[in-house]
Image (cartoon, rainbow, N blue to C red; front, top):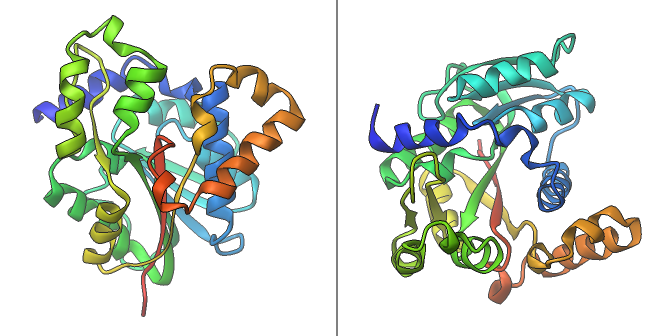
Length: 270
């Protein structure tokens, strides 16, 4: 196992991912990702491959809408958690798997959801492998949804919002280099490590993998960083304003880095 793989497993072994999308900021990420995906998702009961799908929050959502889901994740804990949560849901099949070598046949999926793998592949050749594998399993004209961490998330989320320098003072000196290279190293045992994209870089990688990018948006938008997000997301009217602000700014080039995630929609032509 390489150092990046070991760090990945150490982080997710903490078990924090299962409930992450239930927090106020996680709810914003989930709601926005779902609405963006629904814009281009083929109608149910299409087969969606949820690759690197974590504990399966999106797999469960897709199954609830009538989709057939093939879920894969490299973390056995996540697969076990989804198996427990999806007991009695025949529309979901899950197994331990790697985005760089997907155990599904060529042209077998109507859509691929890639929310996670690109975060954890600092080597461009490895990201290319993952994207080409997603393209391989897509049917002609199938759609890929590829999520990426914004290049400025380490500073805006990690430093300004979470103030991770209180626990890891070295984060302050590492952020400028991470903004240059995209690679943010683990700060300590079990801490998060990631690769982050600029919008143009994400688009270029998808194109190089033989995919036509039809949309690329900022997911959460500027509302993500408000200190009172818990209260805002709990109030229906305030929640609506936060979501509408994200929609209104999602394609503004100058604002694309203000949210922590980017989401690209791409088609396998022919």
